[in-house]
View 1 (tube, rainbow, N blue to C red):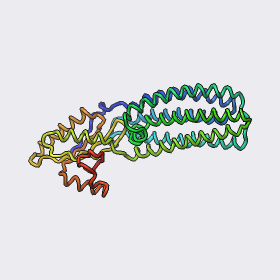
View 2 (view 1 turned 90 degrees about the horizontal axis):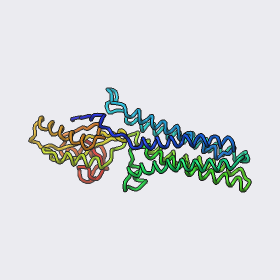
View 3 (view 1 turned 60 degrees about the horizontal axis):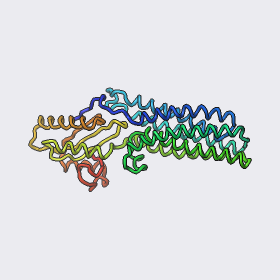
View 4 (view 1 turned 45 degrees about the horizontal axis):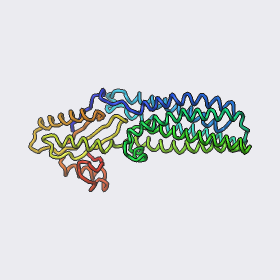
Length: 342
């Protein structure tokens, strides 16, 4: 097996970083105004919204920290780099959103349902919620545009499941939850004031907590999948196999076993059937040319491994690794989007 590790300078900067910075700036402003309003009005729903915004600020700071840690150069202990640190911190963010955001909101809601207190200076709450909706809406639009560029024409849910950049969809989901929470808080405060039933304020807080819990679970599931190790996009496998197939001396580019190490970092183990008449030196030259073309067209491939393998050996290895799921899964070169043993 031949292994080539690409130059770290060729790694792309993740588009999600700018989205996180925009969200952090908005949430810092929102959190401060909500905390003041919660103290003035005594509203449970407003307090829940304050906690949500504070947690969001912490979450975005952790995501930026994850980006920084993931960008470190590989070392002898971590030869494939630290890219998955971003996935680790993304998972921590989901846990914080569930434990702090949802947990505190539900706790406050239950407390105010059991011991309702009238809301003071409700007008302050409405003004703060309106401003918060404006700030959060601006952040949401930025996050939506960023995610829309990534997903292109792919269905939203499919793009979410296939995304390799958690911050890009985390900010979008958090902002969506924030906008829904603001509407719930406004409705709860209005109902509590209009019907003279402060219990509705506590109910609104509980509903906000449930919204945050659902979002946190979705984010945790996807982050866990990336942290464990997902394949790179099928399009990358097809493109690399196509490049290898065009190289003289390659009889067949079978497929590739891939792993996503970070949003802009992927490892590829490529299985190739070479011309049996080729000598070792010729194969090494061929591999070097393939590696050069891959680095030029796909700088996100930070490690490329090439294994000489006949088609029959490849099929046997795929069957041994994936069992029945690896049999009859389409053309060997991976145009069906499945990765394989190499």
